[in-house]
Image (cartoon, rainbow, N blue to C red; front, top):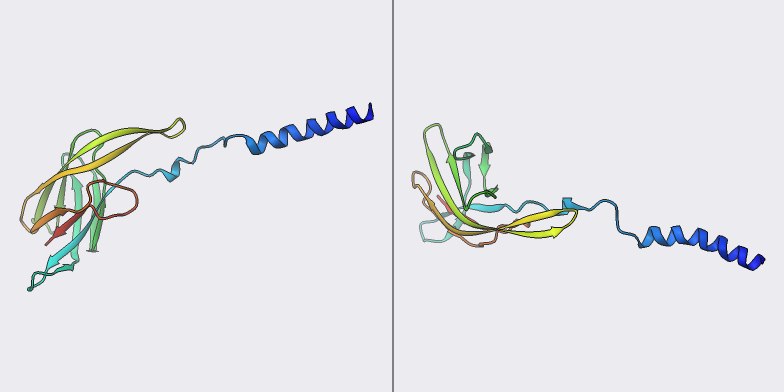
Length: 160
């Protein structure tokens, strides 16, 4: 009988301990899943035609048709990290360099939703299709990596 009582007490103590270690976490870590962004770097061509890193003295980037300011008067810009729209297949950005000098960039992309988990819901994969732009100060834009991501890989090269 003593043996049965010890076994029952050990089981009563071990069940919650085993259940604690074997159970799923109450909170999902959705913070690891960040929004994919389009990343770009600033370049120029030197006199020999070689690609060189460049810097813009001042840049403000806004989303066209909204009051959203994505980059606000940033100085010495070498890299850009910009969001793409989830609700449309194109994103229009306005690059302002000075009071009256600006370029408009139209990025066409595909949005593909995919299920991540019950706790985190859906995520959006965005892939760049094409880029068109005005040429006031901007010389050209080249897509280097189509898939917008959260790891900082270069998607576009902006040549000035």
